[in-house]
Image 1 (tube, rainbow, N blue to C red):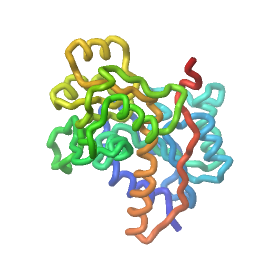
Image 2: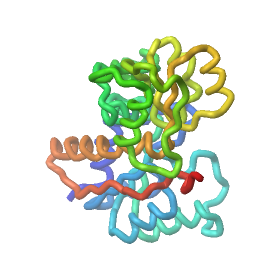
Image 3: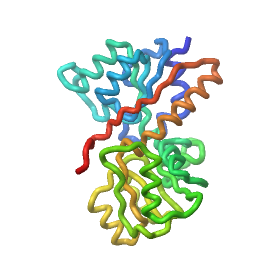
Length: 274
C-alpha cells in the first residue's frame, strides 16, 4: 500500500518546503499521512472545478501549484467558497498538497518546464538562491537559456503560442517584431518584479506572465529585451508533467506506485478576449 506519507516524502525531496519564499504557504492542507493513495491528480489551481474533478474522479490526492489558503483565515466554515472546498475535500477523503514557490525554486522546477516547452537549452537560474544551509546548487527562480536557432520576435511569439496551452488571454508581445531572438529569460507565473535581473542577464527576450503596464513600458524605455506575456496558468501548466514524472520515478525507487493524471481544465481567470 502506498500511503500519503510515502507520496509526501518524495514530493518534499523534489520540492523541499525550505525552498519556499517566507510569505508562501506550501505543504499539506488536508489529508492524513497514513491514508492510502492510489490516484493522484495534478493541477495548477485548487479551484472549485478542479476539486470537483478530484472528488468525482475518485482521486485520493490533489497536488496543486497554487495555495488554497495563502493568507491566514479564522474559519473554514462551509459558508464561504474556500471553506466549502475544504469541507468537501475532507468529506471525500481527498488530500490536498501544495508545491508553490518551493517548486519555482527547485531544479528542475516550474521555469525549467517552461524553458523546455519552448525549446531552450543550456539553461541556468535567473535568480539563484542564497548558498545557505548547504542547499543544492542550481536552485532559484526563473531560467535563462538559448534557442536552437534564432528567430524573429514574431516567429518566437508564434512558437510560444503553439507550445503552451491556448487561453483567452492569448500571447502579448512588446518590441520590434523583426528583432532576432536567440537568448531568452523565462519566469513561470508573475514576472514583472524580475526586470532588473532580466536586464542584467542581457537576453533578447523575456517570457513570463501578468506583466503590468508601468513596469512593461518602463522596461521598453530602458531598451530592455522584447517582452512576451502569456496567461499565468499557461506559463505554469507545463510543470505538471514534470512533477508527475518525477513523483512516479521517486515512488518507483521506494517500490511504490500510484495512478496519476494531469488536469487539463483551464483555470486562468480570463475566458474571453475581444
